[in-house]
Image 1 (cartoon, rainbow, N blue to C red):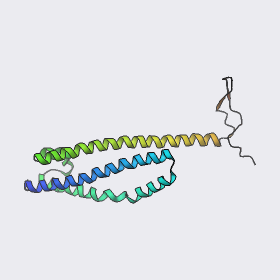
Image 2 (cartoon, rainbow, N blue to C red):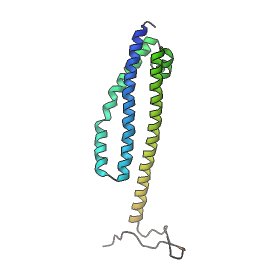
Image 3 (tube, rainbow, N blue to C red):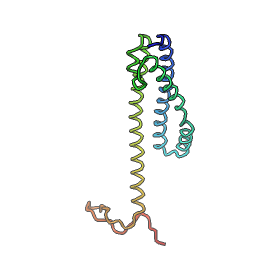
Length: 173
């Protein structure tokens, strides 16, 4: 450990700033997923298109922050005599003094919370989109299948009968 404690503290402060950007990035992703679900439920095609365009323009926004984080991790690993893979927030939390220890612990807790929220929101959004696709597929199959005999219809007296050659759309000319 040839580096001074002050150098390590400066790099930890830089890492905390990078983590702040990561936290903002995660929050924006949560808002994006929420907006996506809202637009899908409203069936706002124009809003969905503009959302897609906005997402496509922001794709590389996190790459710069990722490289900064990786550079700081490499520098800290070198200063502390650790392997780069071993430079984690938990391990840094144990290696630094008290004021920075608390800052790392707070960032770590916030990141864990945001990642958990992001996973839940992603699951909800994926489920909504898969249900929309399933519903659309069922609707199109019901409209476009001719003479499907596997469907059941119910009569007014409660009995069932196989659907005859009645299709929702008649394609005969």
